[in-house]
Amino acid sequence: MSRLLRIALVPALVSLAFAQSDEGWRRVDVAAPKFEVQSTGGDKLTEQALKGKVTVVDFWATWCGPCVQELPELAKFSGKMKDRKDVAFLSFSVDDDKAAIARFFEGRKEKFPVYLAASLADRMDVMNFPTKLIIDGRKGSPTIRFRKEGTIEASELEARIVELLAKP
Image (cartoon, rainbow, N blue to C red):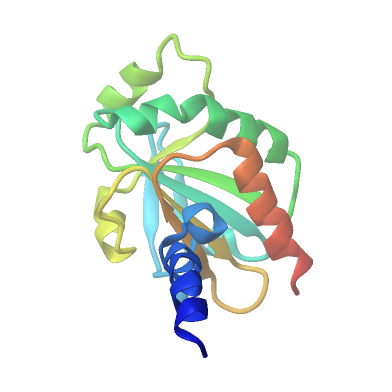
């Protein structure tokens, strides 16, 4: 290959190497751990609830500015998915105080169950907030297929769900 051609290809190859492909989503394909979490309302949830569907899990905290900023987008996504049997949305707060979370939502428009999941974050390798996991529970044990750290838009989540549901 000529030197001139190699020099011309370097910027293109570098941009490909550092591009945020798939809008920052990482394919992980690891088994989801067994868990039991409790909602701020007292309801219990286990990994068994993920079976038969694709589930978006949002790990967030009330003290996290970007987490709070994206709540309207997550509420929009949750509202669109609420009647589907094959898709679910779960909000996992890493805050320790159930009463503080309930107070946080007083007067807010977003309405969806929030689960206390501080201990689960470590087991799911979540260190940054917000973090989204997309868990595929359609076949066998629930598997974490995708992970993204940072904020999202509802349309981005919908596109990722459509892509995953298109594959058996």
